[in-house]
Image 1 (cartoon, rainbow, N blue to C red):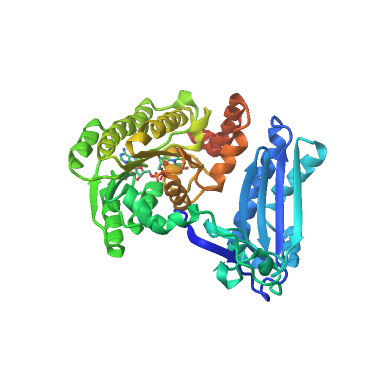
Image 2: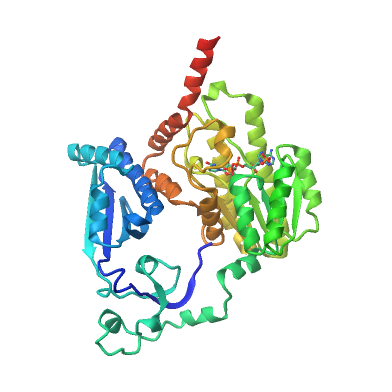
Length: 456
Ligand SMILES: NC(=O)c1ccc[n+]([C@@H]2O[C@H](COP(=O)([O-])OP(=O)(O)OC[C@H]3O[C@@H](n4cnc5c(N)ncnc54)[C@H](OP(=O)(O)O)[C@@H]3O)[C@@H](O)[C@H]2O)c1
């Protein structure tokens, strides 16, 4: 969950450490949407570049934020100094460079995509900032985040301390309203507590959501098939937090288990329902195993339908609650080579979007969480090989932070890049592009089949 720093804050760069501070804008614009082969490589180079820099703070990047406006993508970066930025841009062994160079070669040949950068030497004191009721961000995140009183009330004084410090313009009255409101984490617990039920809690995203809810003080009901994993998680979480946990080992692809879930939770005050249990399949549709596809349909769709109806009714009755349904970026269009899995996620996405509107007047917030590739148990079961992947922790955090604010969460930079870069394209082009992404994730299946055939 994003933490809001209540009140008025400013950035306080250290005169020594941040003497050469640099603000660096780097980005691209898609000039011709259809020239996918030209702009996809550079867009894909961005997350790689940012991951590398975040993993190596000694390279000099202090912090960054990503923005999109129409067809233009912008990364705002704060660097220790120009020497560090220049050294990194010229280093021959950075992992992002092959993709970046390939793009530059393609960009020179065509005007389908443009790139730009802007560099500003800002220095420690030639800047002034104000953040009111904002998360820690921008220059304050890159340097130090301090209450405004530490650097002066007025902008003129903050940028030049020799100027008299005139009182600031009185804040808008709405800023005072917050004084009576509790902190975001407590508010979240008040709104969706006291107890959350999480399916798919034995692994990956569901497990991580359970971990983060336990830290926020929720009592939990944990559901999945693997009882040992659920009990280990419950023991760990009750050891760390003063919460109650109940474990329900159930196979939600079975009708009778969904009935058991209904009976086992009758009379239990559940304010938040997270449907993270699910799995995927991949490969050519004509090679599908029908039993497995039906099992997926029952778990990903039918169980989600039944449980959303169950908890939706109970929450509407109590006038308060939250429901999170786990969709996917593959649910926004067809996906060749994972056709049926994508179809199950389109079902979940559409259901959640509609329930978001329908249940809101009853006090129930519904969210579709649509992550991109995530490093969990999912890939192994789906027989996919993912290159870049999000951490379950980032997905859980982005999901919980979006509940009650938006109909759909696109947790993590990779999910947003995947969704936003494809959004302006015609649907059939998106299907083709996603098909080639999935072909990359399932290419090993052909090799494995060929090897088996040679062996026999
Ligand atoms: N990973 C990704 O790239 C990705 C991307 C977008 C969306 N998603 C979606 O996110 C959700 C969570 O997936 P994940 O990435 O966290 O994968 P994961 O690590 O494999 O976790 C899946 C969870 O679902 C549970 N589950 C599977 N079959 C079940 C059944 N029949 N009954 C009850 N529980 C069952 C598993 O527990 P047991 O095996 O113990 O039953 C496990 O806890 C899924 O709906 C998936 O479609 C994943």
